[in-house]
Image (cartoon, rainbow, N blue to C red; front, side, top):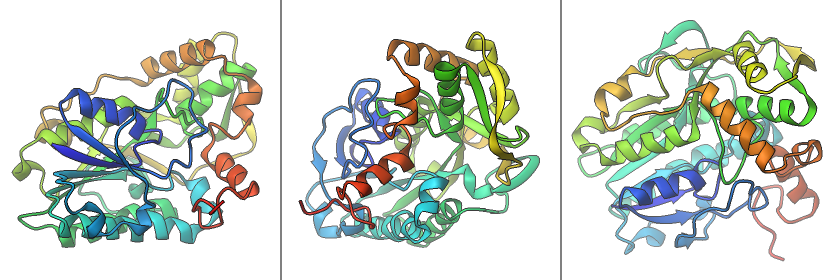
Length: 344
């Protein structure tokens, strides 16, 4: 297939592109490369790229490219970025996503794989939630995912097949590293300070999935028969990979030597608290074969941080924390408050 991947230069996209290529797909990217300063483990694979802000994409931009499928990853990626300006989250994650889907449908694209999130379950408690669970988002990020899924459902038809991949919380090494997600963050703290620093009281549940297993899920859904995945939601993760944050910290302490557990100054209970059932994707998408556990991912990160020379100054800097990098770009007038690149 010829596949357009939005956000192909990001944390997830930079690892997904080579996975798709390894399965014989022809990849085109769409990304304004806000995080070009965030390389850690190599550089993203070079593919033909539409250098268009996704808020500006029209059917005319896609017509004639013979695109079979869109994998839509591009978004403001976490809650701290949403807090920067909640309206931007709705402008980019919601309105632009729906507009992109409409443009894709109008241009003849048949499949639209949307990178949704288990965060739309919000405060779910101790029960493992399947795809029929009620939505209970507690942030603009989570709400935007709910509303995009609902909008895409109205676009579904015989010639346009949307799929909603609700990723668990990602972790693991990437060419475009993020250290602002829980597993990567805890390991980075341990590697650079000798401390495992928790920003919550350690009790919230999180479903977790390695970045490469997410890439594998999208590739498997892309290859699945359309009738089995049409207008379906799938929780993306691996059975047994729901953890309380304190359990993650214990794994980090077991892998990284001589670490002391500590709590941030404002550590408190986190209202984001949910466990997830992943059986549907295993049942309906047999090509999906997740390989990673959190322990293996912690071992991977610990080795990579040592090999890559991760220091406390590097970790405290902007490169691997998305909010800090956006703030740096804004302070330098490289991007405006709307997160568009300045004309200069």
